[in-house]
Image (tube, rainbow, N blue to C red; front, side, top):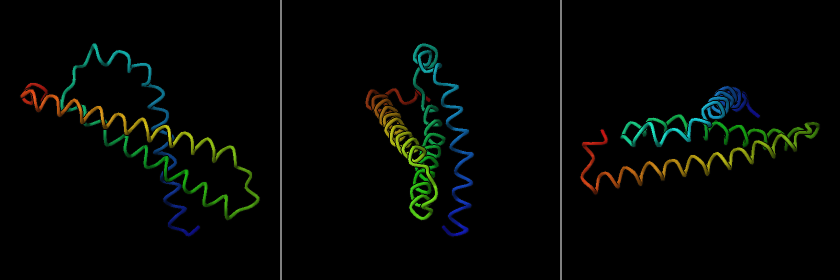
Length: 118
């Protein structure tokens, strides 16, 4: 790996771990969202952090795959598998959130309620 690749990996780790912590800390609140917070356009604000965390986890997984293929002494098959599974599950989750946001925004747009959800 080059110097640039190492810096990218190092900067991806804190973002990814912070995102995992916040995601797990706020996960129980998902059940209360529908009753306390009706859909608004401001819900799109969650899309950027989720996308950034998803890209960071995919970057970490890619770096782990490349690093372990170069360094034979690294015994991190379980770590690579964990990051790969987490990245794939997180990618599916983020994609579903984006689809949910798009569907709700389009519903409001076609019903003429866009002013009501802003």
